[in-house]
Image 1 (cartoon, rainbow, N blue to C red):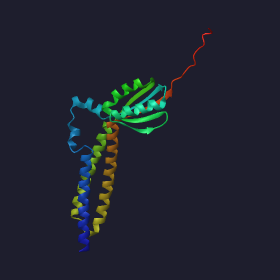
Image 2: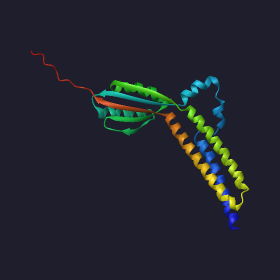
Image 3: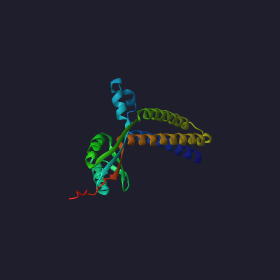
Image 4: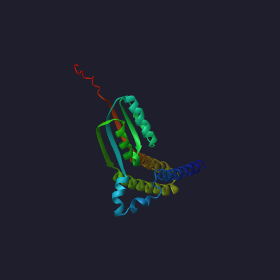
Amino acid sequence: MGKKGGLGRIRLAARLLLTTFALGMMNLGFSDVAHAESVTGADLGAKATERSSLDANLSLRVDDRAAALDRVVALAEAQGGWFSELGAAQVVLRIPTEKTAAFLEALRKEGDLLDREVSTTDRGAEEEELMSRLRAREQVLARYMEVLAGATPKSVVAVEREINRVVQEIEQIQGRLRFLGDQIAYSRVSVSFRFRERRAPVADGS
């Protein structure tokens, strides 16, 4: 009776693990897994742009660093962003990607632009590779559940060990996908501030 009860609990746990995996896929925005394969050639260029992350580094010359920093943070928050790092002369901001261009343009009004560098990184290829691995792991997990359904009490422990290993791999892949999704959705903008030089008035000798 004890062995049968333990086997039933393990099978129930395995089903819960598979349900958790499916919910995780939905939370990642991949409830329709076939969507990745449905992109047409005409959409390919736009798709690559949509799945890119953006990083920008700017340097501004200002009269008052503290006041300028406060204004820049307020500007970011107005765009739905926030600061992730904050220092006396530098701030790192996360800005919704679709609003980044307007935000960078608005920054030009906050001081003299000394330097500006903007770069993008295509994340689409890595996402596709991770999704392929995720689908493969899901299939392996489903097969192990089938094996578990007919497993003998002696083999249950070994099957459970393999299920746990696959679930850990799935969680690692999902974690990386969440990170990539965050990088794509929110650009990273670093702004540093320098004092504007103030020269003493020149005496005219009169």
